[in-house]
Image 1: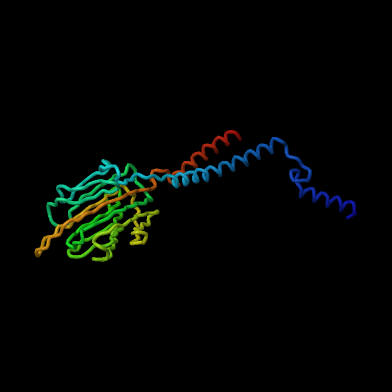
Image 2: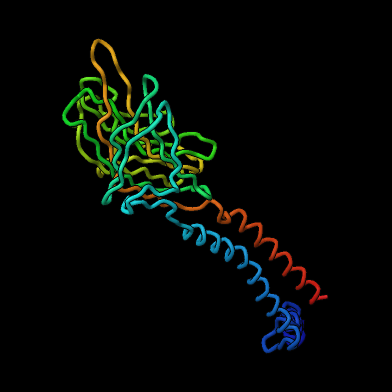
Length: 292
């Protein structure tokens, strides 16, 4: 093949490899560039919608914290928000003075455990929560006292999530640190703490992990995932009268109780994802109409 013919063939081959749209120096029509640029921006916006709404939902969930219970017992009368109920008890004696609610007596109608319960029902259930409970007990040094002072956390259906406090179910002995989560419980045994004293108990749940902490030290941990619907304070006495020995109720007091938690009514991430997908679909439909 002559040199000029061969060079022309090579040029034609290179020209065939470079389509008109790909050759150096080729300029796109202005309308086409703007249209594709607009589509690229719109696609990025569509991709950003789900992420934005999910992030909004997660932030809302993290910020939905409230304090539905906070009582220092410092207004000289029991807050009417506390609902009072009795179990084998006809009456009780209590005072609210300074910053202390003191229970000094209860009239029982039977044997075994009798109690006075102070309950607070929550307007909306809580998922994660933290209960702080500061209390004291005193039997006057007499080990015939048999009594409990507890804080309890209940689910909406009445299932007990957890409880903790001072427990003395032994005649002739001092009491114990006590905690229960679901069906798992622990007490430190008779005479493990004095028959008078004070303590601070925390019941804390994050996701489904529940921890009970007594004066800063872990007492028991477990799993419970039902939403919190009610908190009780319980003052109880075990009525015992055998072999000439009769039990009695000493004094129990609460200095402070607070419940802090997160609402379960805030939209969950799944709900936010479905919402964002719906909005993205609407936007996508409008963009298709514009292209048509």
